[in-house]
Image (cartoon, rainbow, N blue to C red; front, side, top):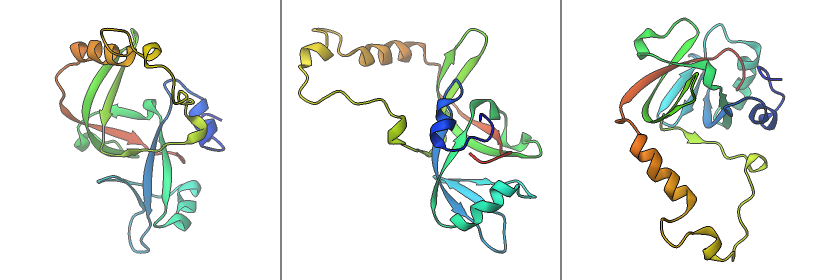
Length: 168
């Protein structure tokens, strides 16, 4: 269920932190390596292709959802990619210290996949603004962003490598 989820809902439901869901476009030329474009970056699928990756050929030119689990990523120079790893570059946005681990949030320039069934319901329109905002200080989200900004280290461009060993 965790490694090979049946669908996007199951992939997102299982695991903490939640799986990263990205929108990708399948590129499967007959005379070259199969890739999935994630914005301006391309994930080259490792060869020989797994059966699941071979099945992506029929999706040539179509948008797919790519699932990338946090533990499948390690921060390293792209030139340090090991066999089976695919380099991605991104901009570190912030670090989240969890005590025994640190979550690194970085922007790869990819577009997040929005799956309506997974999103929390939005507040109903017309709700009084007084309930959503304190008189001073803005919304709770504004205050959290302000606090996070004070803890945010200097942003830096970095690389990461991802292990692609199954369908996303």
